[in-house]
Image (cartoon, rainbow, N blue to C red; front, side, top):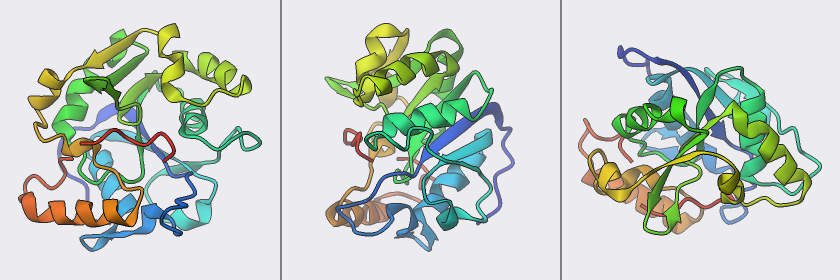
Length: 223
């Protein structure tokens, strides 16, 4: 793991979801090689420059020993596996008022976009990118005020993240605002198949060394 940057970190936190089965890859996507590092190392390196606390939610903690993160398990392990369970478990694990939630397979996160999103976090229950009709619920800030609503939704057997948005105050970040920081929407590139992996690697040739941490497509809620 390379040393973190010297920029001032937020007192907030980030939650990385690494609980998916990666069925289409037949191996943990978080451990795929990405320019000499594993995907999870890339994610942690970006986020530790931004946040003072990083929580990793996983049901395979043995895979991530040694990372500078707090590893927590899924609190709803008896229910259908879904990112919603991971969001709930990550929010429960910390007393921080709001946290940035992201899956373990988005190597082109854009720090400036994330910082901009965070400026709205204190005034909303969630801050979510929305381009046209496509939400990015796994590149979003969520507050602890969402915990009870998420719990009820999981207990009702409803696992689509956006289903609880109607019950909370959501700040949506539209395309015009996203384009100020990430006009190509690299932030939302994620990896679910070997084709996705190859395309993500090809992006390395299109990104300068100063921009490699900038990262669309709609994020798969089954990550």
